[in-house]
Image 1 (cartoon, one colour):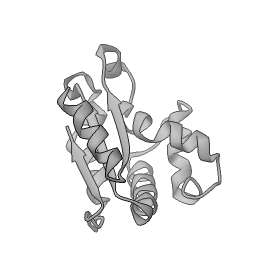
Image 2 (cartoon, helix red, strand yellow; image 1 turned 90 degrees about the horizontal axis):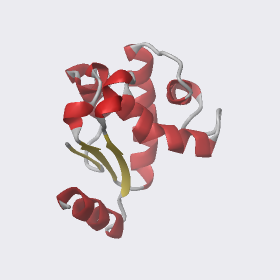
Image 3 (cartoon, one colour; image 1 turned 60 degrees about the vertical axis):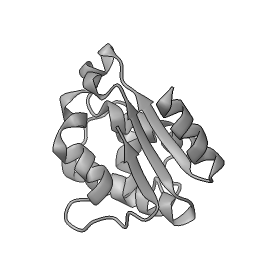
Image 4 (cartoon, helix red, strand yellow; image 1 turned 30 degrees about the horizontal axis):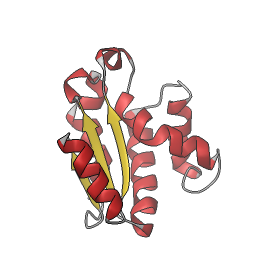
Length: 130
């Protein structure tokens, strides 16, 4: 109930909410958190449409079930989040993280979502709730 309240408050305050709820099956799906956060957005926008052009295409590929390197995904997440946060703040939510796959809960994946490979992403318009 608490996360539902936070999601609603964020939405009412003009935030874009990207959320996922992990299930026992999530542990069998590589990068399930990234797939859930970005898969639907990527397919709604379409391949090659900003921000899912250039490096962002790796998230479309991931959502379609193709493996991508952590480097490709780090750059893609950073590319897309920089674009999304330029329009409005973004709240990333993960419910039931204990069921996520190891790639999603590893420090590299969540760090990639927030900080990128080397240079921190401006975080004024970005928040993560786990």
